[in-house]
Image 1: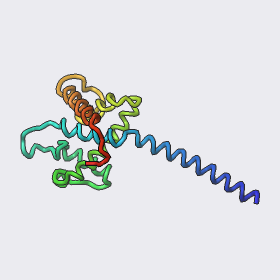
Image 2: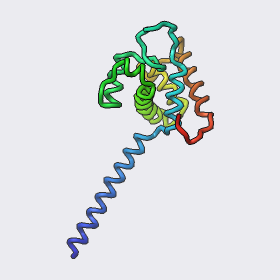
Image 3: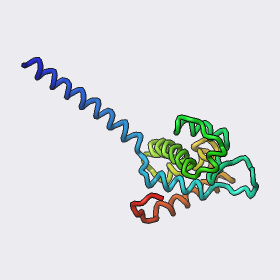
Length: 164
């Protein structure tokens, strides 16, 4: 009986350690809230450069390059999506963009000590250049400023509980 009781206690102890580590890992993965991710996704869409040229080599309302899409879709969907699929399916495009945005926003919130504005700046800079810093002048600075403004507008909107 003692052996059985000891086994149960050991088992419970190990499962609580595993659960604690799992919970911590989940919390770290979910640093950005759904509202933050949605606001960032919308801000990136609203700030996307409008080239005014059909067939400019960028796809969807977020203006994503095909080679970028290839990696993102593999990462998020575990399969490659063609530029045509991405362009013609707004739901699919939003799914991929939301996945990548959550990943990057989580990284930047962690790096910025949960400073939301600094994290948004970092993501916007990365979105445009592939780097989290270096967007303090010229076109990239203007772009980052635009994204931050759109993000703040999105975050200030009341939430209805319904997702769009």
